[in-house]
Each structure stands twice: as structure tokens, then as C-alpha cells.
Length: 80
Image (cartoon, one colour):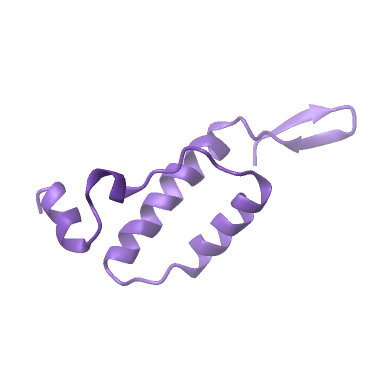
């Protein structure tokens, strides 16, 4: 985890790409795709729960915002 130094030691750098993109876009996207195909993602769920307990994300990618809400619409959008 990227960190920043404070007077009390090191703390996570919540402004790093790791926190601003890797969770809200990377893991969230993978979890949604897995959901379209009925694949359980307990480790991703647990990691995202940890993340959401640390900060309240404001920019979370949602396929449904683009009309993609199923395996069929996902594959149609991506040309499979």
C-alpha cells in the first residue's frame, strides 16, 4: 500500500492511484463481469468491503450506467 509520512509515522496514501483507481475501477469492474457470468468473488468482495470501510468512494464505475446489465449486453457491447 502506498504511504505518506506524517508526524505520527506512515499512513496509507488515500490519494494514490492505488486507492483512487485500482479499487473503484479495477476490482469493481472485475467483480461486475464475474457477476454477469455467475462467478462468485469472495476475495474481491472482502477486499472491496475493507476499502469501503476506509474511504467512501465517489467515482465507482458501473456498467449499468452504460446500459450493460447482463452477460448478453456485456458481450454485445464488446463485440463478442
